[in-house]
Image (cartoon, rainbow, N blue to C red; front, side, top):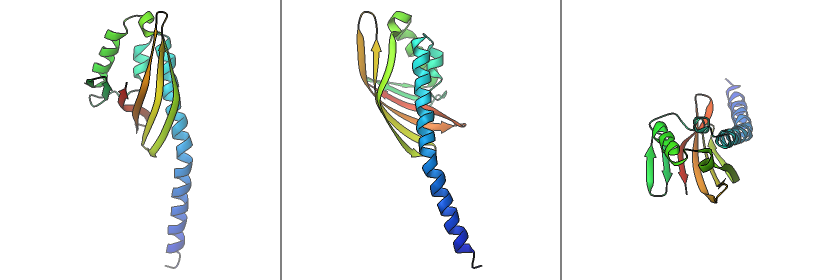
Length: 144
């Protein structure tokens, strides 16, 4: 019986150690999702870009005064708005601020830039990521 406090203290130390190592891994994995999205977008692959999103009817995408629910509806909106490589242009993300909230949740705030031959546009975004089935996915996107 006298070993119980020792076991409890060791379990707490292990939990703190595991949690402290999870944050850099989560940040790297989330950055990888975003990088993969940029590569897919820049080759004109909307489905590849959408692979970073949760493939669910519960996905929420907010832009301007419009709220879109669902992965397919979000993809359909992208296909309507960006129906050519010229309209898609070249995407980049910057000023990424990743806050890991838990082992399964994170918030990312950043900037996006879409450079096209005829113009460019830019804005800010807030993304909520969740770790689903072992992979980080965007479950909520608010872009302006």
